[in-house]
Length: 371
Ligand code: FES
Ligand SMILES: [Fe+2]
Image (cartoon, rainbow, N blue to C red; front, side, top):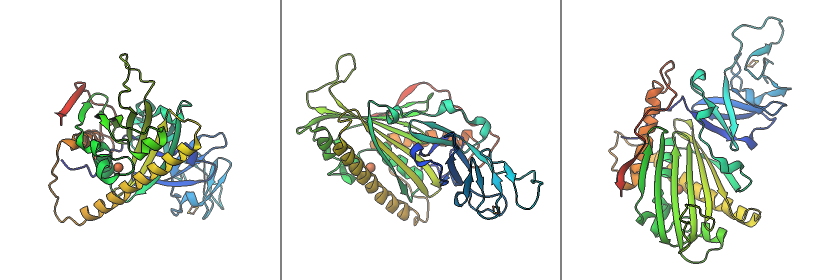
């Protein structure tokens, strides 16, 4: 099964960091829809279609008047619900003069948006990344544009064995690719888990520089992917011999929560949101600067590789036959769940299907066993 080429529309997607949305009009395309974002004077985030209903001028190139947008071309004026409340030269406002408004939820430093059928939007289904706004963690973050379909980034993040080859000298060491993974799927909650526990590994610069550990480490990578958008990597490092306690608590390890939000911009481009939250050296700006720079470098290594991959895949004349191995079990499970989300919504563009909710299943089942 190759990666779905359609979008799961009846899902929540990260559109922006909350810090990106201000009293300035902010354009961003999500799932092929051009949107404009802004904050009302009360601080609420608004998302409207970025095309004026009159002659399609981008509203993001227009002006705010209080909480309304005044089109920068001929002055059609829209309130935060997208309803046109004034047109030039006449009192009567055409009944159809409105632009679509999209539901947004601001949570865990992200602005989530719902592009699909409005009545299916349930904010309770938005997966959480609580570390990003937890005072017990310090977070660095960014977003890099990717000129590749979002499926390539899902594949990339679900299989971290590539760290050894693509990110050597930053986060990759030989033990990552050499250590088997365990993949499980929670069918009911629609979550893919991929775990790789290294009990005696070299410490890559990303962790030695930030934690001060000089010798070999216990390094655990526990991925939790909530398709289609939110990817969490629970990372634990500690000097060899420092193990979590019997009761499961782990006060002596260093914990890094690596969060990605994978949001399709168009069929062939993706917003690659990344954040790194840590529970140590909370006030150390040198560590923050280092982790920001390192992670951005790592993300850009992926961006260069995936842009190249997208370029060569576009030259394939026929649908190619992939060859998958054990390291791919997480990515394949993710594809299957995203396919199901697309099917539930009745396909990429269709409305009116059953969509939305989670599927019943048999709980958390192993996929492909230990590789
Ligand atoms: S295009 Fe917006 S008012 Fe004419
Ligand atoms: Fe990577």
